[in-house]
Image (tube, rainbow, N blue to C red; front, side, top):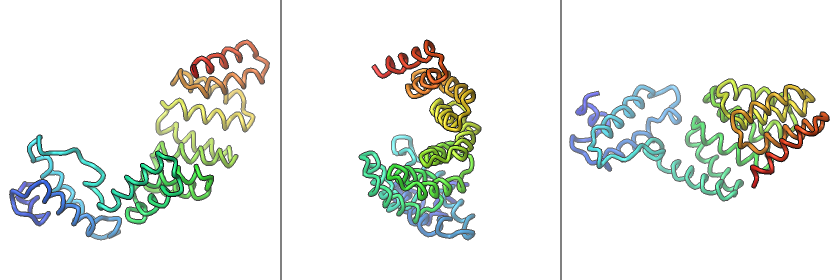
Length: 244
């Protein structure tokens, strides 16, 4: 898109300041964002975004800031999300969940807000509500490894191990390099009494992350249970060594 056309789309005069460009974009986002105009104005919103990004790129390097959440979404939603993140970091899960709920009401297709809200609800043991959040995130992005993993953790907390296993395997299918997910898969298999598969999963977790204490501990406990005492003790000792 040519620069003069970018200014026109945002309703600005050529030479507008960075602040004026940002304010115009935010104003138009509030009006035309697809979350507020489903199935309408999609092309208009895309044009507005392209114009904004083109003008941001065209600015001199010293006056250009990295794109932030608040540049792309309604300003009040950005503030709610930031406050929610701070509360979650302080383990104020109930208060954070309320703010994430405001964000998802304003921007119902913002995947990360659904995931964070679900994590808070899970911490509060409101597991069914958490599962609903992860379900919404997966509707938005079925390829989200994080959503599949968090869903698996929640189902494990409910002792719904077959369903949890399906979720962990979906997470692994999308990104097989996370040792913690293999470890959680192993725990499900252990609880389902599929011990050989559980051991293979713990081994895979350790291969991917040799400092993963829980995987060493889980492997050691399983080996001790199976009578492989010497190897089991070595694994437990390694877990203790890693804990320092």
